[in-house]
Image (cartoon, rainbow, N blue to C red; front, side, top):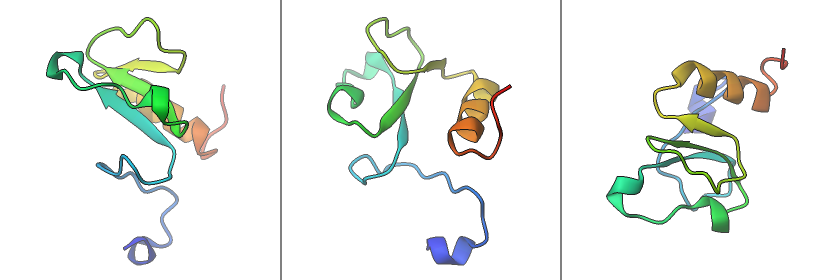
Length: 82
């Protein structure tokens, strides 16, 4: 499928938890599932609707769309940090 998207600079996917790609974990503590990041080195940031104080990764509120987008642009080197 990725070949069909060429020449895209960036493709965002959802639901590939076990696939070996860098990912931003979306975590909602109220659902009761455990977090991925402690056991997945490819989780590079966490977005949640609640604070996760013990998380050492960059953290975003789920509503911070601009912040998440800026993080993705810098991580993918599509934009330099300012």
